[in-house]
Image 1 (cartoon, rainbow, N blue to C red):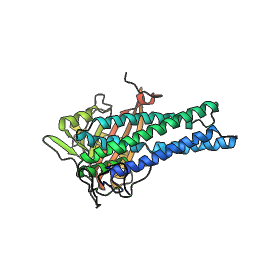
Image 2: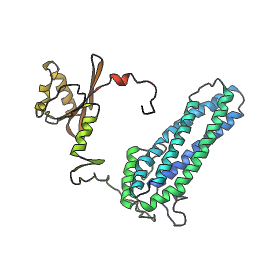
Image 3: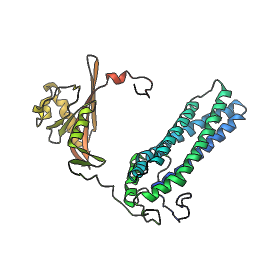
Image 4: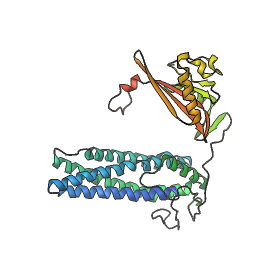
Length: 345
């Protein structure tokens, strides 16, 4: 399928599965949802009879679901495409597009709030608000998508190297697709800088980030030892790692430790770290994890004003059992949360 609006005048055509092709296809679908919303709002203005009004109100729920599904479209741009553009020194346009995403989200929230009114008490007010939000959303999406199709995407195609598009497809696949799933999302676009013809082939996942200097390379980034240790110690949870041999290999130094830990337990059998009366429970968890019968085990106990949530997770990679991680957290403060908090104290 040819892509209109991108690389115009250069004969640039991208195949299904190229990230930019996917985004532009989604633009068309999202605009179609917006058009259907505006038509529903217009029909509601002139609707007569309770049955007709009821049907139109019910249709809003389906449209709201479609708009909610489209959120991953914006997430893929913000968390995958934009960072790759920023690496090439392109910072202003992505920042502007992200700002417009937030404006679109505010309009969608207004629509969701209206869609949740099953039987509006003030129908005249409801019709006016729905007409207003549908017009604003249609106009905002149209202008935004035109900027991306004709300015941002050609800029990205010109600046981003071929090998980076492989990483971008991986990132898109990781976040996922909800409006539709590209048929050829697991193929390698062969367009170089500036576009051009493409071919497709099976490809592996992008490789883990290579360690450099004193940095520990992981699949999604890297740390120095100091950074990694500080991250683990700063998290508001206690973490203990037990190896596949059932020996304690690591524990974090959280600021507010829940259960006492000392370096003396390193290398100790985890069964020996628990009271005799609970060893059979620990062993049951480990046996189930090793056999693949269970992935998670959780408990919670009251300790004065604290409620301690304890979770055990089986660690596996490529089907191989690597051990168990225990995560403990005082969730009493979390249970008291109500409403929203959107501003910094």
